[in-house]
Length: 564
Image (cartoon, rainbow, N blue to C red):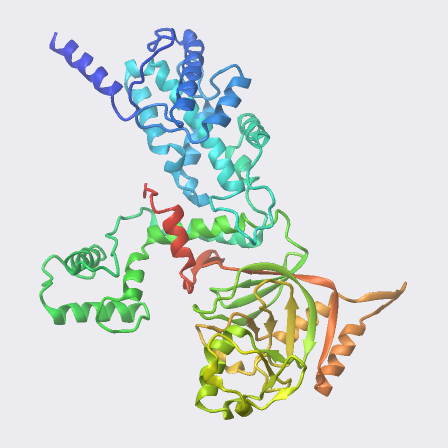
């Protein structure tokens, strides 16, 4: 008798676990004794659960929410509400493969619990170990719906990513059509290899493949993520701050439980040691940089990799055969030719306060020995304050003031204290070796008035951190870039003769130090992007988030993700 009571109590307890017992308002029974009768009952439960989900924002139990309930309802309605992942009280072999894939989806930069992994694993274990649960049509119906939801969500995330479309994204469609999801289900259900079906949705870009390969090495080296205390900084609550700091240092093995948090010298010693280890300024005090580095745990690094994989999904489905790729955080430019890296170059990019914008454009023309028309923003921030000190500033930098008639104005004749945000004149630096743009400028259409160019401060390319410009991209290998671009302008004069007047003209103008504009017929695509993680030699190389962009995106899209 006691055994029977225990069994009944346990069954009731199981029913009200995380999956939850939904009230059955249809005529479909919940417990089915005969496996051959299960499919019909599961179908009716699927219909009921979908009707419930559409009225309750996707919720089919107390803890289960179907994210794509509208699309899933359409899919099951079209197939007569038949289960697709279960048959006669058992998961199909394909369902087992799918659950296994979801568990390994971290290797695709995905978060398994976005696709019901913990819930599916718990249900699967219960169905195997609990004879009463094995007969529960609602559990089988819930499982079927979660697996279909998982397929559709994985498909969306691998094809399109999780980031919102922005102004530089070339993909026109912001939403995948319903046909995409139905075709994906057909492909997955008919495939013998689920992983290959999903791989077909991923970007066909070398950088994506390299980063994904690096992700495998990263995950294999981590094996299991550990949860660390997050340090809120700045924090007005100093007691809370120091408690978080102590907990985080102890979790990282940098101090032990005997550490005296009242000892100022001990704090300074520990923090100085940590700062030196990660090439931070050794202040011995907690600051923005130190807190950021302590918070940048392997779990945060994984989210950074996932974020950057998604950025590749915002690129065109097919990249141009020849293009220029500038990655701001890496301080490097790559030039690609038919899937081959033609060459790389160090670049200098914008300072955090004068950021280089993300954009997609095409090189339209090249200017030899250019003049520099100084932007209004620089005039307000630099020229006016310096002119107030001494108008000798203009002669020193080779600047001249020009009015709207093209006449040169004496800087000393202008009351510089009269202006703050701008002046009714142009400030121009004449062409020459001392010009800030160097001796070559690459123009491309954009709304930010930025371009790529040589520089008269070539020594800056030796710096490890090169976010130093006003927003334009300074290119160390400007000669190689110019040669590569004009090579693409070669034209056929006759059947056996190729000529390139552009290349000859460029050489002559540079030799004579003359200002000329060379128009590019075959305009060269330019992609300026922001990737803080790249695949290098089978590993992941992380770059400093110099503009803080990825931190914001991680917090916006991935802050609520669970470690397991």
